[in-house]
Length: 421
Image (cartoon, rainbow, N blue to C red):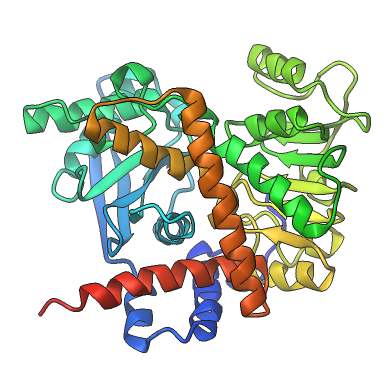
């Protein structure tokens, strides 16, 4: 259950705009460029008819939003969820623009979504949904135009179906049309671990920034998927104590710290965290306010708001999810002296390795996993230092510092490209 919100805190697109407005003022963004960056470049809403297993016909609603293509092809995931809405997809597309710019990879921002509940659908129904959605996007996607990827409730199998559908229409195999594919179909080694590993890498830099120990910190993680679960595992491997975790069913804690490989095996076997031996179950919404050194919200947006920010006890927050903290909560957390590493930096490991996958597909040569991780770490650490420098220069938070870095890089491309007329 999401914490209570007021006003427009529940609208992620308006929340993104508030951060953009602050950064635009600090970097003295050209008013014309502000007008361009404050709205999506292109958005498509489509009806997706699907024949269900029982022979009935259902029509699903789908979206694809391209926020900016100034720096390169649009890049961003596709999520399947019952609560997908257009403003959410707009916000996620914009966050992808800023994220790609912060880590300085040559992509713009895009995002897609379909209103559906995959828990109530068979694999065959999900495949038909995916293929019809992909065919509906053919006019706006492509390796040089818009490159989708997995997101909430989508995975490498969905990307394989998406790639195959596009390739059938092109009459040639086009592996670079999506990222997050199975390795045997052109996926990159290390892509599955990338976002969680990136969160752990950035958390280490944040601990130095905050003057906290580089090992032995108490960590609470909201979420147990590829970002939360693997992020927790990599933090555990770096010598930290994972004292609490949550998933959609609830939360567990152990003040001595979990043995993360054993906990993840339990999760794999049972499908949930609760019931793990030696752990105490508690309400999932309480995880955000637990006493800890590092809090990693890695579930979904709009989790830390004006309704619960004052109760947050963490010293450092590293945002594994997109948009987990509202602008109103930012002000409260900043007043409390809590260091917040924003989503557009903290979870950019995924898009960084997606870029590597796209590069490998285009050149037909693939790297070993350690090469991928080494390249990713160089990019992520450099991005943290760029954001830190911008925050210091403009006397602002790391979040607004990250927006300043991103906005200036996108505005540079807009300026150099000029306006076609």
